[in-house]
Image (cartoon, rainbow, N blue to C red):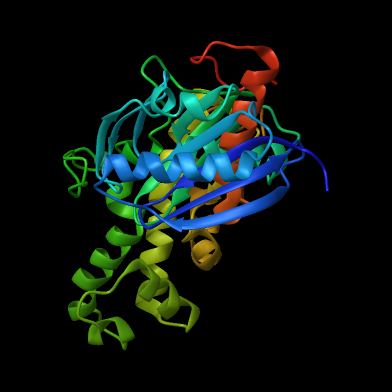
Length: 323
Ligand SMILES: [Zn+2]
């Protein structure tokens, strides 16, 4: 078994997964616990236990933590709605667990770095990822560096506005891509359409369909479900066009829990919408829209590799991935 270069931790809304990670992204020793949500003290204790158990004799392993929410570059979780935390200086609180650096980063950004280093976008320097789940997230790697932004809030791709005055988004704005393509939104849109749908649809019989219900119905041949997913793909392509026009990536990855089940409808529609809106289409090929490869491990692996980079370079905390 290769030596670990870092510990990676993914703090999800319900489960907390931690592992030692090899330089090639391999997951070596994995632990899974329940996330103690809405209890900062217990969350920090759980993280300390995980780090100490995984580090063993190694008191200097770098630690990378991915978490859903807004994370500032100095390792403070400003707002993590799924976990119920606000303004927790995680890196500082955990400093006594390791002599190595502690990198704390938004989970979708961490996943993007993981995919760029050792996953579906390996070998590419400029990568955009959009993650589809209950919400919509994403990340950006520019010239091999994870884009964090001035406050650490960069690459909130879910809140790119695709329709001014459009559907209400949980963030409070209207018309964000999350309001059209998240699992929650897809379920709602299907529920709104089902009563007036002219043909048969299994969605009419469901009280409050989820995104998962819609993708299952689509896989079962339901035309309304397939239409709703195709439309979500078109909206994603509209958002992707803005990202491509801004960043000119080599590849656009679609990741997250809902990506695989919906890709048959989402990816072709997104590719077409992107092609139609991309500037300079005469002189460049549209970047391929591809599925992410690392699954649920992407954020944990990416966070670990980010921390390992920082250890290697002795880099400041606000510097991203220094390839
Ligand atoms: Zn929004």
